Image (cartoon, rainbow, N blue to C red; front, side, top):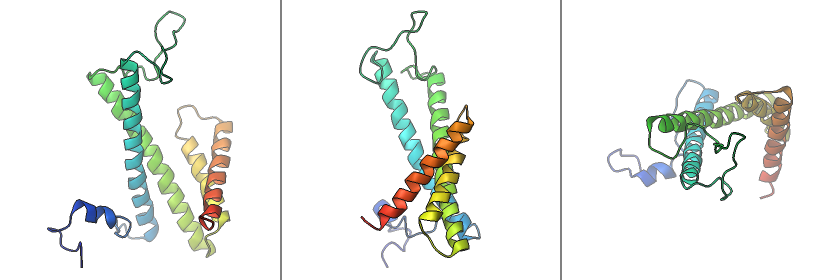
Length: 179
């Protein structure tokens, strides 16, 4: 069986078998599914955040803003910065800010994936069917949970994120059978 010997497995074998293998055994399929979803999405979120931060640092160090134009000036005549601690240099403060922003975003992505995966699994087990209703409820609760991770959360923001999560999740569930 290919990929069964630890010494002969390549990195590509690991990638090909990533969806087939269970990397966590926490004693219950729900916990395993949530943990795997969290880790996968958190990794994606970290990569996305680091690449975005690197882009903004590069643009800012070139003296431009994200639109490719000169940055706006504030009232006191100084440049405004999206992230005040990221200055396009390799100082300790800039690195710490990038790690903090990347960590927060990877946690948000992981939270969203873990909550959604756990809810869809739990609803499928409780109701005995996986349909658009499960997706709508899981999407709404995940959207609300994600909204709560924002710095300044308002009631309207929580409701908007819940509606958006339900709509996206339901659409994905309905379109899965079509495409």
